Length: 416
Image (cartoon, rainbow, N blue to C red):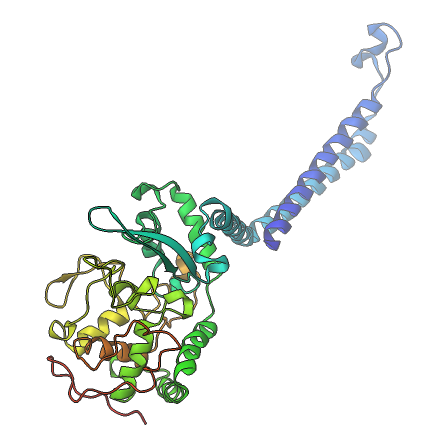
């Protein structure tokens, strides 16, 4: 922005010098003209005695030539300097353009589309009142729906995936379609402005890790210490699938915390908000009569029969691609994000801010979620309505089933 202002000021200064010089020349020529004093004969140029050849081709000519040379020198030096700084002017223009988009996006978020009413200021997550109807459109209940935090959404969704949700909404939830393709009131540019504003309040990697670590520590300090040790041992690994893991019992406990949590980030770190009916409005595992409402994703009970542990881990880590086949018969849905890989990393050349390669969860945390999901059909796995809250007494003492699931998974190795 500073370079853009400098470039613009330099250009105006150059133009001012040329214009002032032109004005001075015209004024000087006018003042040099003789006032009208009589007949045309007295004023006729060819009747007036002018400078002799020596003076005309000496002082007069030199003055004209030096003036022209000076002006030419100014232009010859100024234009290359202006050209050399052109990239800075372009960058300044892009920065100014981005700042304008962010300002407009903030106005839409707060007063236009009023996203703030559900997702709160700065995208920290909030609560939306929602009317639940049955399949016949009849009233069932009014609930308080957790609207997830948006200050971490670009760690798991690409810009195109966020744009898809804004355009088409989330059917069966308070998230309406806001973009023109979905019948919403906002234009394509306004959707882009909202995304630009979302970039401005994304958490840093450090702050996002503090939220996850704080969640686990608040429920089970010992588990948090063991998780921290495993995460440190995995720093710099090339293959997340072969990373060091927690014990089986710890994975079940940690998986339950991460899967069911609705308290931190208004459920934005949770799997249950999409895969468990009622989780988003405080009634997980206890859906309304005749209505499994609020389950945006498929039921994961029995997933161990459909995929190997490696396939399951890769899906949670990478997310889905639209149209690609997963597991036995499931077609990819781009609204299933990857919780291990940051989809926007390495996209800075496309104008996307680079927040680093890490996503929301570490390899050890994704393995914990996978282990928990592959035991949802086990009666000993905790699926209480209170799951995911700090008040639940079940987190610290989750029982480890004797044996895993039908897929033949083995116990995760103890980390060193």
